[in-house]
Length: 92
Image (cartoon, rainbow, N blue to C red):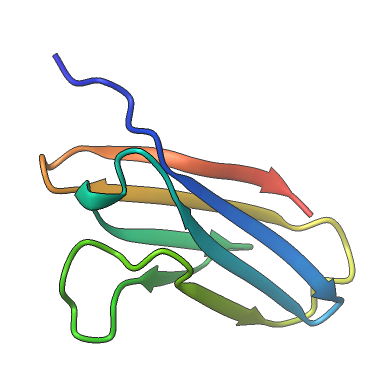
């Protein structure tokens, strides 16, 4: 049986053209490999520059586009035990 992992991802919309998603860490930070972030159908993979795991706390990715209306942001984490969890599902 798998248990829910405790990690956090946040999203901010500093202006109508950018969304910034940041990995905040958490109790299970050492097990997180990457986060797939989807903003309005566009997906980016948050991973360390050297592709090593675990993902570094404070890592972020920026999306650029027209986000003047409400925008859905989804982040799915992939862990060392081959599980996947939705870490973020919000509208900005």
